Image (tube, rainbow, N blue to C red):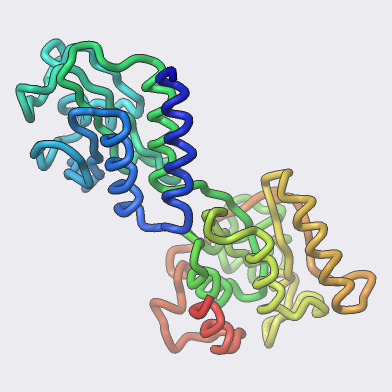
Length: 315
């Protein structure tokens, strides 16, 4: 069996092992254990970004350096340069940090999370020149598993305060933000959007792990918290900014969404409904005070019934 074939089999095993687990630390721990046991590495582990330092995370092997500054050593350099680094001989690497004299060669892979480096996967060998481009290719795939796959969808469901709170409670949703979608004005303010002259809809950007919650499930829940037959109105909120809609960027999502909309129209017994289904043309993040508004203001206005939040919590 070639090294690539061994990595390929382990990657399938890793995906199965991590399925359904959202905690990044837990995912790191099992990935480190799997790679260490099956590939026979001398030291296998993770460092996590904490301010201007990398802090030791889950690992397998002898004791290690606890903290590594930004830009220092192989790990800090991988972080600062945002790239995988293969080191045939650690003693020849400028600024090498000698956590152990037994380490002879090393590979460090950055961990990407929503466009930022959040840590590194660090693997050491007691042999010189132990890592090559095959290791680089496959270990980058393992590193990508730490935070799981990510997909994005945007929901206009009336006032975005309650909609954000609802979707945040869904297991598998990893990030939400409120903003203004599919209008004509660049970077509008809330005051501008409120006039209904910008063409924007109040919207919630939902980022989710498709291994944990499906697009179908999210859209089904969306239809449970809106009145799909109401035009430009949800609850007491009236205006084009409160119109309902689902907006997507991934063209592969379109057939799924079209089928769900067709099923909903059939269920409601209507030929059309005033819920938009469109590609996302633009999205501008709303002001900070709107983000997680109901968490900051527990008694704040919301057009959604408290029952929908109980529903989300159960799910």
